Length: 299
Image (tube, rainbow, N blue to C red; front, side, top):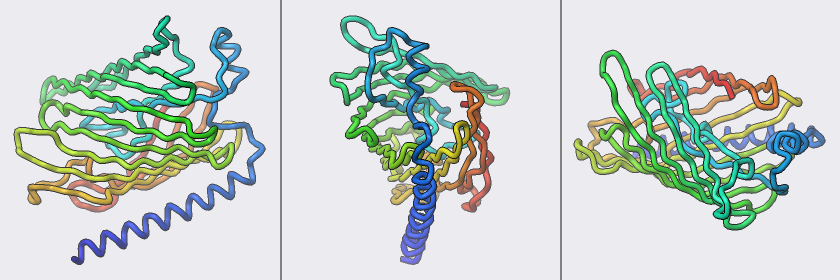
């Protein structure tokens, strides 16, 4: 009973802090309403780079989870909003099907992965996508191990500043503790310089050799505010609102126990090259305490 009350108090405090941060960002965004739209690619630049590209009034991004299932990006997994994103209308289409095919790869010191993506828009505001990721992790102590991720989802542009989506994925996790996830996402732009993202996801373990049955519902939030032409501020936050574990003596998997909050500064040196740096507070899976996790990423 005491743990439930403590969790409720933490959730209320978390929501209060997040709402306060959003209020501050919204006021700041309203003061800079005349800035160039920070979340849509520059149309003039696109026209020069892709002269044969079909003209569309709106663009939709598709998020594909490609991060390493053990280490994650920057050594942890704390945000759905760190996934690889594509913009469907920039990709070459195969005639006459209208399907977009795309690929992406990542190579780190001990791991590498390759992702194949297919995207299709049956109508102007709807985009369907599916993806498959193959990964390899190799370390001097444990040797080689392979994993794969299957993903599918749909995004719908409700209005020019509001996009809703659903997605589902399955992660093999090296055939040790596989899990699947379903999530609903919202992306909202109250002003031209402020973007708000929210996600509610349900994650559950698949059948495994340990007979472990865990599940969790996780909330993830992200705000991105444009300050100047090349500078942005980001605020991140997440919290599991419910958890289930059939073996209480074993800790929850990190993917299902992500409490985090923090902020970053983002700078774009060129229209297609940028960097993001900041501090994210993450709950340590062993001590249960919040610890600072530096974040540094090229974009």
